[in-house]
Amino acid sequence: MKKSLLYIPLLSMLLLASCNEEAKPEKTDEAAQPTELEEATEEIVTDEEQQDAEAEAEPEEDKELAEKAPLYELDPKTYSIQPIGDANPKVVLLTIDDAPDKRALDMAKTLKSLNAPAIFFVNGHFIATDEKKAILKEIYDMGFVIGNHTKTHANLKTLNEEAQREEIISVNDVVEEVTGERPVFFRAPFGVNTDFSRALAMDEGMQLMNWSYGYDFEKEYMTKEKIADIMVNTELLRNGSNLLMHDRDWTADALGDIVNGLRGKGFEFVDPNLIKGLDEKQEGE
Image (cartoon, rainbow, N blue to C red; front, side, top):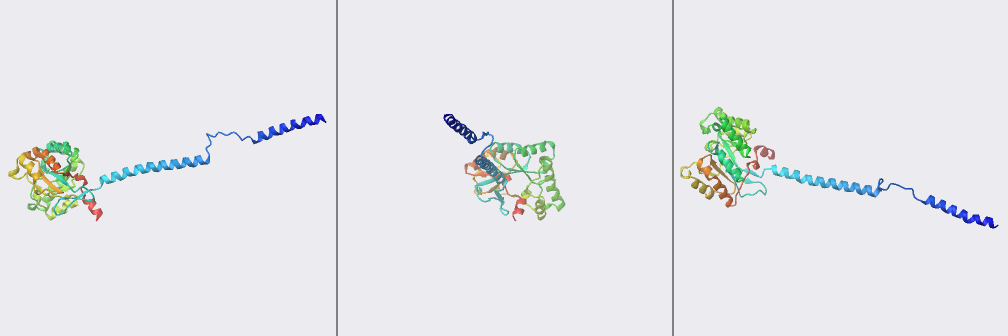
């Protein structure tokens, strides 16, 4: 009887040990096998990071498109510069005719140093040599827009259609040869166009451009001091004025004073690249 009683505690201990062994969880590598919650969290974080990246990229794309969009357009009657939408209305456009005769490169350097954009309207007889073509290329490489001012500066109304074509197309061809781009602005000598020159300019994708005011071709203003004063203080100065100047010694010498004087009156200078072109007008119509 005593001997059988000894087996009972021993058997109980063996059964208890066996139960503990079965209840013990199987060992796993928790670091290598994430839970479903962790996997879901990781997916959410990844999606959020991707959305953030896309959100950061979109404003950059929008910014590039905004920078390329035109901010101004030409008034076809007055040739003044009109703002589009919320663009600053207190602006003027600088234009230099008869380039590159004598001082165009000096004028470009002055404008570049003052961060003042402009259009240089060139005559074909001034870009007939390699030396003058190199000057034209240098002006273009400085960031200035090149316009067409005909080959010989003839009054187009005195020419037949074939002669007018030569006056205009030959300049476009040379400008493209030198810069890689054809002009997008055309200014007729003396501001005189014909029905044919208007149609030809449109066929070439060029905007017609005259001016609001200019004085440096008048004898009274052929000094640095006189031209600097009248260009800034004329009663004709308005928001959007299209300013006519020429490649002349007195204008070149006064150019810094003209730019600073206009800025002193609160005017900014229109980048010609931000003026709506013919192709953009046609798309919007």
